[in-house]
Amino acid sequence: MLTPVIKEILNRTEAMPGLKVRGWVKTRRDSKACTFAEINDGSCRANLQAVFPNDNAEINAELEKVTPGCSVELMGDLVPSPAKGQKFELSVKSIKVLGLCDPEKYPIQKKKTSDEFLRTIAHLRPRTNKYAAMLRIRSELAHAIHTYFHDKGFCYVHTPIFTASDCEGAGEVFTASAFDFSSLAKLPKNDKGEIDFSRDLFGKQTYLTVSGQLEGETLATALGRIYTFGPTFRAENSNTYRHCAEFWQIEPEMAFYELEDDMDLAEDFIKSITKHIIEKAPQDLELFAKFVEPKLMESLKNITDNSFQRLPYTEAIKLLEPENKRFEVKVSWGVDLNSEHERFLVEHYFKKPVILYNKPKEVAAFYMKLNDDGKTVRGMDVLVPRIGEIIGGSERENRLEVLEQKMQERKMDMAPYWWFLDLRRFGSVPHSGFGLGFERMMMLITGISNIRDVTAYPRVPGYAEF
Ligand code: 4AD
Ligand code: MG
Image 1 (spheres, rainbow, N blue to C red):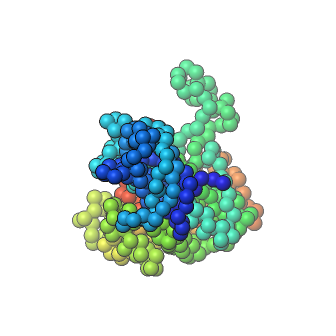
Image 2 (cartoon, rainbow, N blue to C red; image 1 turned 180 degrees about the vertical axis):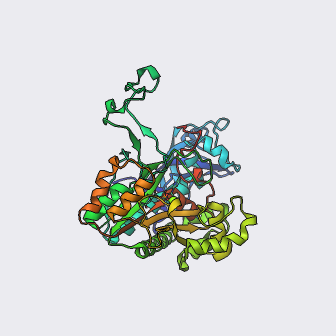
Image 3 (cartoon, rainbow, N blue to C red; image 1 turned 120 degrees about the horizontal axis):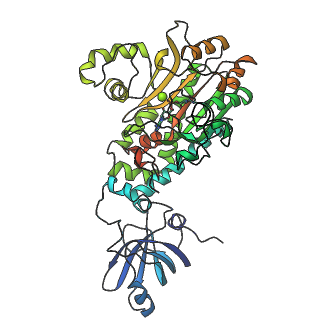
């Protein structure tokens, strides 16, 4: 039988003799009659209280080495706790210190430390209550997402990480190469003096994907409804609270869906996974409501209980223009809205999530379906409090001639997209999809205000330690 983890032990309804417990000591406290230690093994937020008698020479010798942060293996009996605060405690019969932890040198101290400092010890910060809770919620959120799509009959697909196309056409791609870049002299060149990627591993220049959408479309127009859940990469040099160079994206893509259906799904999806976390991770969520974002539960309820405001871009401009004095970037029709405008609409104006749609074609990606007005496209962004854009999506341009014309207008090299255009040649159907930024969803759920703190090892400009 597997040794139970502390979460299972604390969920027990009855006492249990002869139990083995392994974990890290959070705190120790010595009293006249005995020593108490709080043990945590990462399985849940709560600790198991271990009680050591002080009349056992072997235990006493081992206790000499016990300091916060050390790892231990305990044998003992799980007994009802006489004190308040816990149902059971471990009455220890033997202890073995597995790994010492020098209290002078251990960087995690009981006193409150800053998020900035903890980022520099990202390998140890999961030992703190806050980051362990964050990582457990992250795991539960991934589970909620898979469950949501699985229950709706979506097919989970895996799209490539190496690609030869730039889905967003924004040029924010990382080149991925097997060449040795340590010296320019080692790089093969063509007669124009450029790096000759035809001699690279894939026979052409390739990139890390910015989005699985284009390949997702090929799979949705065969399987009907699919979703991806994978890492995506952007070489955008923006040092903000909501941008990472490496982030995870969930991208559903649905054949026969129009923009309305896409918005309906996005709203239902956000609400459903938020409810899942409220239900399944109450202990960890409580930590964030208590120590990170006092209005967290209220703001999550605002998401689950309200219908999201649907707002055409042109209407948004009418609301924003009179407020221009508050904005750094002034608004007029045609401007790509940024986080200050998004947050104004959500936090000040509607006081609930907003789905902004029908934006001008000039500020939209090439694949979004052109509206009959010839000026706007069927794209949509879901905007939420504290973050702004959390989802970007659209109905896709499914008319070959219109798509080709748009790509020509943008002077895009069409050759790498031959297969994407084929979808519009053979049995083309209306279809739609969107991408949810997983880290931004984590920020929404936990109230954590910086994207660097919702992932174990953030990849941001100027920092790729670990
Ligand atoms: O709006 P984006 O760029 O849309 C796409 O990539 C589409 N191809 C998605 C689709 O339709 N299948 O990105 C989608 C979402 C954003 O709304 C945001 O939540 C997140 O991905 N995102 C980022 N998250 C963290 N760091 C970054 N640098 C991000 N860029 C986008
Ligand atoms: Mg976007």
